[in-house]
Image 1: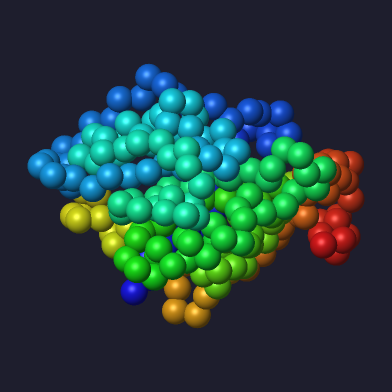
Image 2: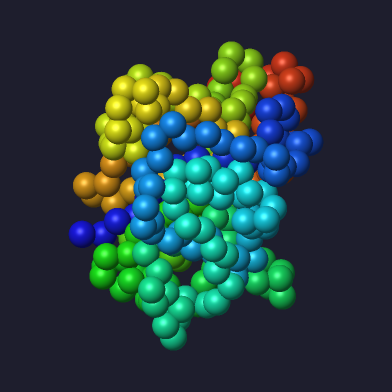
Length: 248
């Protein structure tokens, strides 16, 4: 059975305007887990740092790493490519916001065909993958890897029209939350009842997949940041929502 977890709208910018804020991690975050999943021998989690991501264990993903360790996992950074045995001995792989190679003027896949084939074979063989891909250009960088698992990436900026404005801060609760053990937790105390996502792209999963965060019917996606800015400006200038959204 394939085990792939997909963050549908990965966390990105802090509260406020998507146009001005910068991603920041909290290096002083010290989570407390009342009932850790692992108290003895624990699985090892590898956080990929070999494909241009700034979400590193010592940087922006330090709070994520702290939470995993508080739950009993062992975590290490991965600096090797995925092909030629790069996944040997790995049980859980986390890839967050892989970036296109810096020498390419336009966004391209962060992964070679050989690496994509290796990751697909590894997951088929029982490996577990957590793949997070944020708003543009991260969808383009991860698109080919997602496609190997039947996932389509919107590759833009997801947003929600609210009255005469649009917001990239999307909230999920009730019917927009999926039915999955990830959200149910191991007890009522661990159940996830609402989620807020700050700026991300949309995803379409393959047949039979479970949607964790279901976008509302009126939610839309701007192809890039410039388009998002233009839409907001036109609404702020008093243009009707119907006219503005007809551009998409």
